[in-house]
Length: 426
Image 1 (tube, rainbow, N blue to C red):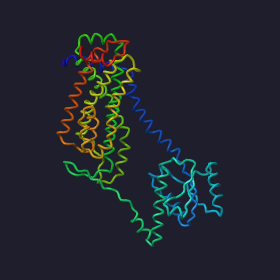
Image 2: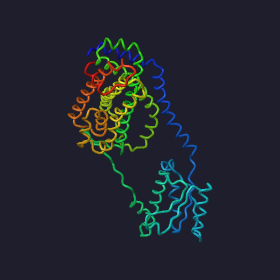
Image 3: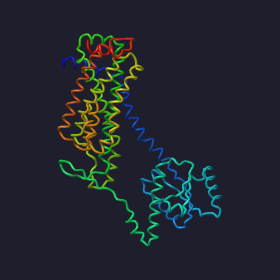
Image 4: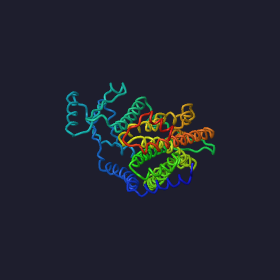
């Protein structure tokens, strides 16, 4: 490898892209889109805060008032998802007629839903719910929780247990999660590690997907450029491919830094507000410098592994339509680690987790997931990095040979036999 030539090609690639309008438009577009996605739902929620009008027909004669009180006392978090305006209606002498009338009122828009509480249904653990839409999962879940609490209290009260004692008997149990590390133990919010792993995993996935496509599109554009013919005639395939990938990688890091900085500024107030509600002894998940360093290393390895796939595809075909058909194979390699996501989260030291984290195409995503959940043994990290780095270098060499020949081929879709010939004689 000639570092001087790699540097010249990388600098040219970086300079061309950093000056393009497309780069700055895409750089600005994501933070703006994020800001819109943060503000618009909040505005819509504040304007669409009407309560569901719910009629309760209590045939037992003892639960109606308690249900009204339970729904009125919903906490702020539940009220933001679903709130109810409850009306008690006594059971009529003609139950069938009352049912038909309440259904008619739903269709007429006078009410949103109604409940029928019958003793026979309670014995089976059910309450009848009528609504024009029964697909509102969140509001129905909250309603079920409130009804369950009310019915439990009623059952305990009928057994002669005092209300204050009943509340203690039906109180839910939550885990006090303590994370154990080599540096010591610390209490961490339940599920915090999962969300940190989830965020890092999908951030890396999206970045690799976006810039892999950019590499392929850039190669396709260069097939119409005469300048690249001069470069190809004076540069070894490996140096050519390495320089191109280094330039685009530098662009990716530049854009990623801008995006992450903007996201941090936009979301910092919300994060601070959320942390303020946690008990003082509970830690939020820590984005440690060690994990950030692993993320950057795995990004670089993953970028070179997947971008070489896309670069080879772009060089081998003549237009985006042809290239996209084969780009699906690279996408499959990116999507495959998602199949193991929950298995790795659940047991990062299982045989499946260890093996997949050492398979080079999967290493960047699976190893990052393991590192975010629980630090693997150092030898596994070192072996995974070594195997993935070696595979990345091999892919750069392979793609460089295809690139050198394919970039000069026009108008003909190559066969597998021709691709093999390119690899042998480039």
